[in-house]
Length: 139
Image 1 (cartoon, rainbow, N blue to C red):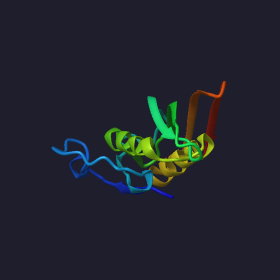
Image 2 (cartoon, helix red, strand yellow):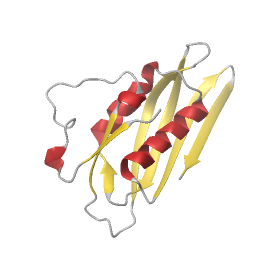
Image 3 (cartoon, helix red, strand yellow):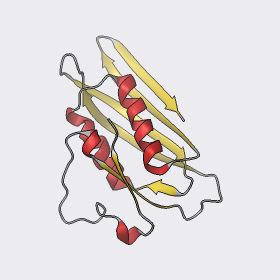
Image 4 (tube, rainbow, N blue to C red):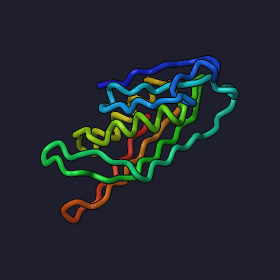
């Protein structure tokens, strides 16, 4: 289950940012992670995305899961466009997956989209049944 990716060289090539109408993907595999050229590919610097209102559903019970997703990466040639990422993360809203699978899939999709030098995705999920789960994956 991998997401579509679209690498652009110019900000003018981005299709989601500034669009008059937004189509919300219903599955992460349908979402497009657009990227743009890194203006400082010779320098290591961290880019951090913080999503404190992440939601998905339990694949067994269908009940909602709430979490806080943090994505940190060092860009190589391309950077992830933030609106595309927002729509991608939104696609998990009705997607059934365990927390471990969600975090690892997000990492895989980020790596496939922009081939960063380094990336870490952390998911801190709210307690269900009295147990909170934190999952961290790196590449």
